[in-house]
Length: 138
Image 1 (tube, rainbow, N blue to C red):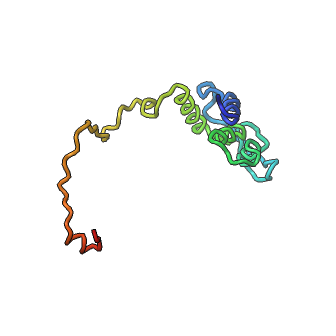
Image 2 (image 1 turned 135 degrees about the vertical axis):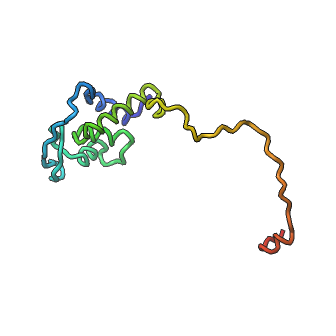
Image 3 (image 1 turned 180 degrees about the vertical axis):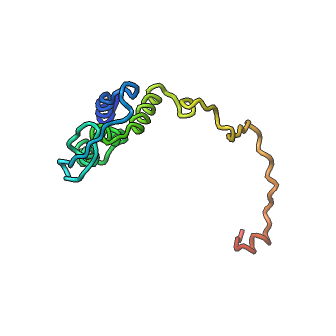
């Protein structure tokens, strides 16, 4: 069963328009945040900046994983590229794909395959003189 934060995150994610349908050049406007009175830029006419939006979402508690993306969406501070990356990541998670599968990459070529082999016998022998030299009493 999804947690409250995950349900809240999914609700806000449903507000993200499909990137193909959205113009790639978002129209950002400069505003003054009603929460902290700092200047910020938003693409969805939000009245609050990212930080104040995150504070509203978390109610003063430590943010959970999805809260950061939700704050970016609700505050309208995500760029078109960030929105595209977020949408791709969420689709990958929903479909259970890895980044490598998403990009059409196979296994990394530098990853080596280690077959199940018996370990080679250890030829190390304890040397009392060498141990004493290093302060090991035995």
